[in-house]
Length: 384
Ligand code: GLA
Picture 1 (cartoon, rainbow, N blue to C red):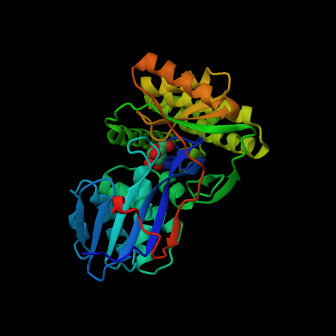
Picture 2: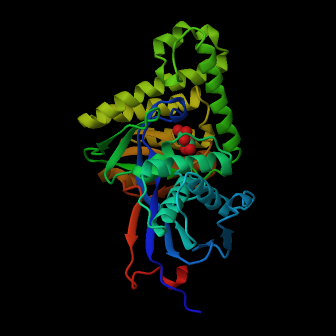
């Protein structure tokens, strides 16, 4: 049977965070960029009461009944889509039956937010086929809720927000307590970003992530006995020192990372605006050190990758990006020396860990992009 043509192509971005790690759920500011690595959804209304899902790289076909969306929590891939659709509907939005074909170029398990890209693009696709305008901020909030309720990760808002609201060529300085944002042009003055994946198989990321979240919540409660603060991001470094005896040593280290990282984001944003890239790079190095020594989310592989990068003369700064425990680093590297930098880092890293690092080529891109398709602009037959 010849299928009807897809009517829309909707994509949402993966992201790289430049600085402000593990502070979004503490009300701090973060500085992510949306990437040209995306999840694309080819979509068409199907006139039925179901969402039919397919993937370009999987043989599976999954049918979700629009009236029973809450019953798919145990599905492997489709639980994200079912969760997004259920929550989008519960928020009062019209949904219509549709066929969705998924094509993801964000590498899975790399810490570049493939799940946020999938969630955000799915919701934007559901709104688009229902011919409803949507607010990218609301889309991000519902996608975050889906991650909490259907994937069991109590993430902050950074990934979904960047995936939905990114702007080509810009970083987003996002205040995670108010959701106010400022776009800052990423002009690295002769340098470029290099993203490297340490390729260590992920394990226990979700449970360790949720554990860190609990630790900083407990730290805040203890500090609130003496300090008036709604969130840890409001605590100043000198206040933390003054009241450090309120905290057990581990919680003190976690809180110290958060309050100092918030301070670094503020300075990094200013250096980026001013074009002081060497100073910006120094802060990336300091952020990585803090994520290793105080927050303890880097591990041997990310440390080895970041330290190899930092030791190359063309590198102005390097750090892990995302949740940690594996995934990627982001480095600021002089453009003319990128090839040599990659060769050096890959060799050094393989020697120390036995893993082959992988480098991803990506631009800083827009968040959600919606295209209405002409009949000829269809996915390649190989993909359908
Ligand atoms: C993951 C989460 C984000 C954020 C980062 C760490 O990517 O999804 O909300 O907490 O980790 O900065």
